[in-house]
Amino acid sequence: MARMAKIAAVSAGMVLVLTGCSSGDDQPSANNSLGTITAGSLTVCSDPPFAPFEFEDASSPSGYSGFDIDVSDAIATKLGLKLVVVDTDFDALQSGASLDAGVCDMGASGITITEDRKSSIDFSAPYYDSLQSLLVAKASGITSLDDLAGKNIGVQTGSTGEHYANENKPDSATVVSFPSDGEMWVAIQAGQVDALLEDFPINHNHAKADPLYTVVGKYQTNEQYGLTFAKGKNPTLVAAVDAQLETMRSDGTYDKIYDKYFS
Ligand code: ARG
Image (cartoon, helix red, strand yellow):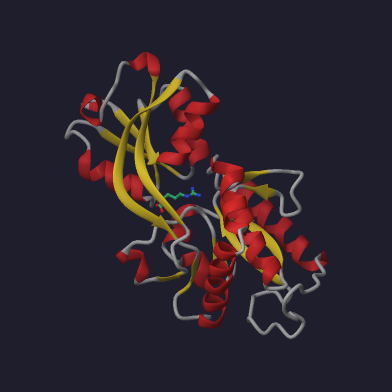
């Protein structure tokens, strides 16, 4: 999302914070025992669009839907908190900057757990297994990364896909970085880039939505998504979220959300 729109989204989030009065399901939150930045709320940073994990949805109370959003909402509800979603630049989210600045309590944005990121971010237990992939226009005739010699590959700034592209592209290919999947999708449609290298579920979703595009490569990078927290700041919240992730797996909530977006 463009910067201005993001700022607007942040203020919309603030309004929600101010007007939102939540009532606890499992635990009283009035005393803010989990130390969230706004008592009664779980404020979550995410970078939509990244469907099916996060996308705008006017019919949803938080303004967003998707696998990450529904998982976060279920966790918030179980903790007696109201979910507030703040649209955040991905690069600032994956670096830990947004979390350190206290913009949100938790990141939920298809964020891959990496050793590098672990030095600046606390992660929950893994909640989704993922991999990289290559999307092209069917008419391009491109069938592999090697076919991209002399061509442009669109990626998201700060993403594991950007890293993978830089490591594995043909020498003469150019990696073009965009702030979000929204700009990447527009760029391939405009012919500004010849391929998109990003997480498979997202490229798969693009190909499903538009039959002119197809996924020609899947790369087994063994990635796992984790929810993220400011490094060392709130171990109580990390533990509470991990406990709820476990409960969700055993009580069927996780499977229900998974089936909603992936079956
Ligand atoms: N899984 C990749 C990473 O961690 C990409 C995540 C991008 N997420 C998003 N909501 N745009 O780098």
